[in-house]
Image (cartoon, rainbow, N blue to C red; front, side, top):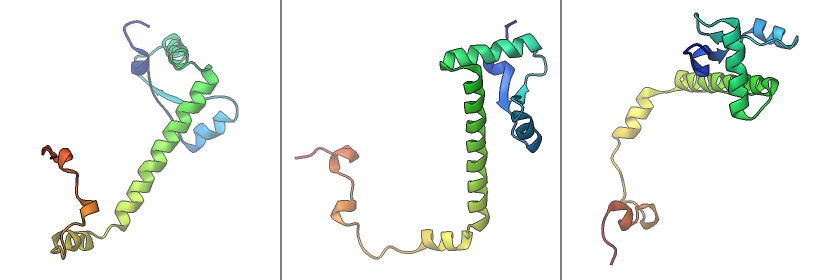
Length: 117
């Protein structure tokens, strides 16, 4: 593959409205290295799917699904961040504790590096 590793050639799938439309025609859009040639891209996809033990089509579908999962996770945390109340969080951290931990809430002595017995 002319000194480029498969992961250096195929960077990630592209998930856009247009990419979704062309996927219906059995086409997939990937971000690839600028210096990669068509034969290098094909060889990289074949190598990665072979390493994964899947067909090229299955490998591409899985890659797209993983990318979508990563994007939705990112959106989830961005939404949570937008709803965050830093002042309430700070008050919670700064409050005084009212009672000692219950016995079942304490770590076992062996977990703290203390001898038991």
